[in-house]
Amino acid sequence: PPLIVMNAGPIEHFERWDIHKEGTQAAIRRVTDALDAERIAVREALGYGAPHFPLAHHYAKEGEIWMYGRGSHDRLTDSGDWRERIVLTEHRYMREDLRLGLSLLVSVAGLAGVDTPLAKAFLSIGGAVCGEDFARGGRTLQTLGLGELSKAELQTLLRNGF
Image 1: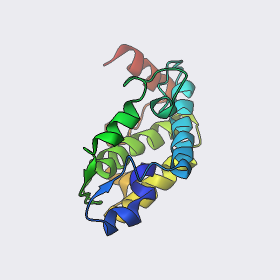
Image 2: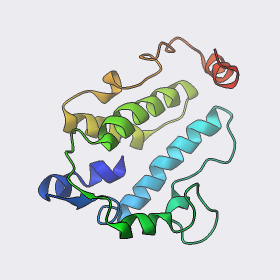
Image 3: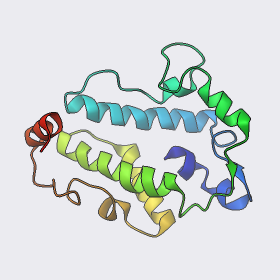
Image 4: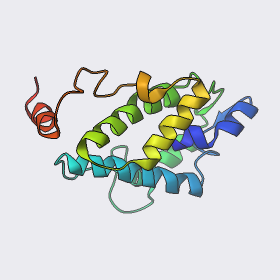
């Protein structure tokens, strides 16, 4: 979400934009790491331990290897494959990552008692960019029919299934 929202101006300005190369600057990475920490806090509040697969490992030059392997981000950006025309209101980072992913994260965080100020902010801003309320129209516990579950009931469902 930080990649798409924090780069909204250049995305709408340039015919083609490599969100992963030009758009992944240090300030945006710091926000991405802070948002990812909110995700990990929700996982931990639900009783999930490591591995959390933090996004920071995707960008790291050393240390723990993330699921795509060392140097995957550099290979991705050096390929030029991601220089594309991005229609901000239609791109999957807005429609899937924000509208579906962050709406679920915020919803579950509320049940788990975890504060997610960045997730809520990006959800609101992304919704405003797209002209809809992502918090209401996204994938929440309520829209999934799970809105009446307690935290313990959700944990049991996640552990045992339906």
